[in-house]
Length: 108
Image 1 (cartoon, rainbow, N blue to C red):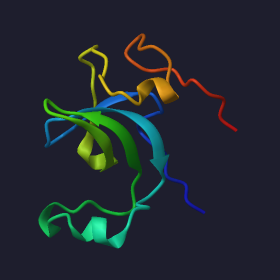
Image 2 (image 1 turned 120 degrees about the horizontal axis):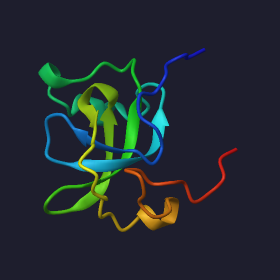
Image 3 (image 1 turned 135 degrees about the vertical axis):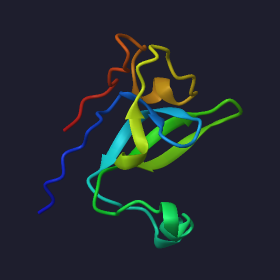
Image 4 (image 1 turned 180 degrees about the vertical axis):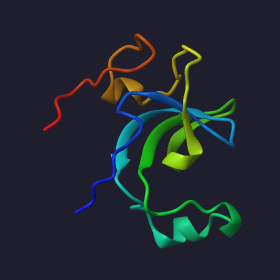
């Protein structure tokens, strides 16, 4: 049984430690759950451990919006106070308030 605790929560705004993008957490895997191809595409010297939470983000940078999959070690909380401008946010979350996005649907 996996007992990992996620540091970040659904609707929280985070940013990447090394790359210039911010995003909103919309799902969390307790440990790596993507493809081997994806994992092996990361340069070995910067490849994160599989045994940590990985976050699905609605992400934005200066040029684009996309979905990102990021290890916990590569994220930090974003306290800039600004919203994230991603077109898919209204499908999952309510309006930005108090630095986060409230869920628009009921979790089981």
